[in-house]
Length: 152
Length: 433
Image 1 (cartoon, each protein chain N blue to C red):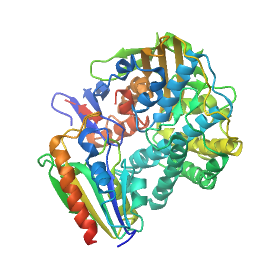
Image 2: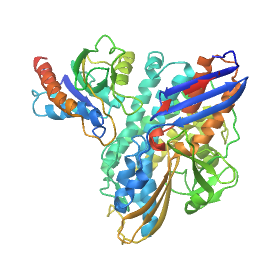
Image 3: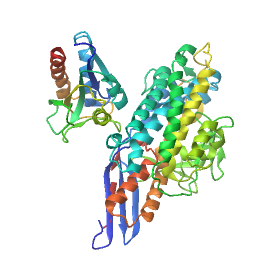
Image 4: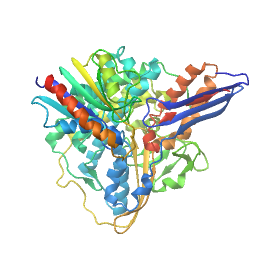
């Protein structure tokens, strides 16, 4: 393990449940083993691809809309296959983490292994706080991602 | 689909590859277009109302939050308006840094829209992701070019989106010469990359459509317009920005959550790259003009589809301008011009990547905002977008619905619409029956 592991929390901290990915990243700072890089991102695909450039493992955490119950945490291995069609990573801009992943696949710029943790959200309104179920799910996702990077 | 009663409907409830939430609705009866609407249904955000009572110094940071793509435009237009109220002028290196920040926004916004959001329309790809496998070199180049713009923003404004360092009177903190020099190597690379982007956009299959727009933008005697100038048009408008609301008027269409703008007594007008280019061609740098000429553009451009080329030409300009500013930069002693708070009315207009952004504020003697008025570019262009839809339908009426819809969406994306700004998503409805 070393610099080759990166956790990227994606979202907009000011749009309700879209903050979930970044909250997980923030909660992981100082808790991850040395050498694991934790960063937050607004979803810019180029920045995300740069962040996982050369990584053995990248873990992307983002809010999602998949029809599950709010606060549901789902884990996907996106290394070889795209996310299921029913799963949309939330983006308040034209391009976000989902586009970064597929763009990187086209450009052959994926990390060796790419895991995505999606947290089901319901409220993405500007200025809203995260909904209680999603706030609880941040803790759950934090634990799952921590275990993931510790085992890496 | 045509139906028995001769009516075709094309409805797009969500238009992809635009910033924000909007829709398109087209209805054709017996070969005649009944409805061609570009609707903006993202909820209005009432910025103008909640600005009232806030300190005038808060306007640049609050309004920058209206848009994650063009926050600099909001900061510049609002700062200039407030500076007019306070009776100060921000000049010298402080002004140059404002232009440099704006160059960063133009580079990142223009290349993202032109290559990643708009170019797939011309090449028949669903998205940049689908395009990337076949145009890998271009996509890689564009991602790197966008980063050069982001880096300018991050260095000057603290971060790429929602910049925080610009203020009424100038800056909270100004960079050292050495800090700006760190941008030079990438900008030198970016110059060649931007020239290559112009050539690539010029090679795209280009629909032919010439529209008789009234082009409107800022014009400055000494420079390609970014932060200041008079409002001019291709049909005779030449006014101080304080006269903006005397000439331009906002109207409310029931279907839309954004206000639309008209020239009083006339109607639709066009702001954005075509206007800036056509009315300020001589102010481009020689290399930007050379790139335009190589791309087959003349000194004016009235084909909205060629806006993709003009955006690339403006990217060349922005890189040239950034290098010029950095080369002549001397760190100022003070980061901002000091001023006494005054009451009054101020106007600011600047050139966001997608067009002119006008702000007007009335400020009380306590420095608090009494009234705010913001006219974003996409709202100003909304009627021209609908006139383009009409023209595209008339020229392509025999196309099947799916192909017609593709062309219509492409023509909306000619405008790089920022619906987030206009209120803030696109939904297409084509009704042919």
